[in-house]
Length: 84
Length: 284
Image 1 (spheres, rainbow over the protein chains, first blue to last red):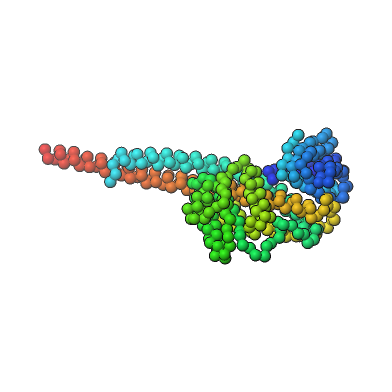
Image 2: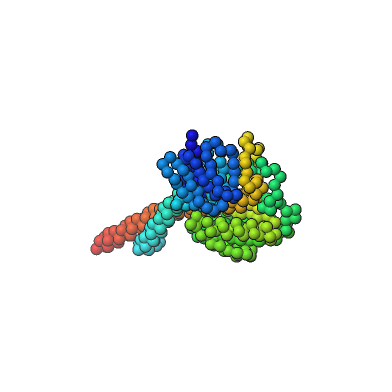
């Protein structure tokens, strides 16, 4: 089972794909999402986002925004996102 | 009748005008494609943000947030006009400016004080000559408008929260299609959020619904403004393209007419010369 991950900015969809887990900087601290996570919504502070896919890690630096997680998906909306 | 040489010069000059308008049309078409593309790219973000905000607002119940609160007495209104820096785009600017002026007059008639801010040289010049003072003027800085949108949202949020004005409006051309842009005046502050039915799943909010909403609302405002700028840009290029297409067609018509006139007067000159030769020969 994998997560459908989308990282969306006002300019474009920065990243989209399947992943095993996602780490992101939430307002109350860094958090990780694995499959079957409870429905969860948090704001993001600027910081690093790591997406673990089968082939390895993809890293991004995101700006303010928020993340929405569910059992099988993670959506990150942010004003800016740069691949590291 | 104009001399042959006059007509020839005119044809040449209209031809070079046509070349310019045609080139401008092509450039506008290319830029229009880019502008609509970035408007399309912005859509997933807007949709996701809007639906999340609606869901959070529904889940959080009665939320109080300064940006959402309407004031009872509206004394001052802020009006932001988004236009273009350059012209040669048909009625793009003048249609909107006319609506804006009507709107401003109506607001003033209701006794409201107006704080005007323009983005783009064209609306600035128009409103200034009509005697509307604007507090602050910005050119349109493209680079996908990040700085401009930021400046505008700072101006609006700070002014609104500090009570410098009680309502804010944004005027721009909504992009319906390449041929139609609709001058639009929309109220951006206080923000209107329609809470949808609460989602079937219960979300865990962190920190909590109200605080999330507080973070999301400025993002939401910026998205609305960005939308206005993107549509305005797409509309500008669309309307420039249409205007230049018309100009090119008019130039072609004019060239056709001038060519006919040229041929006629050439014919007339030849006939006249023939008559002169014949009558000269007959006289002998």
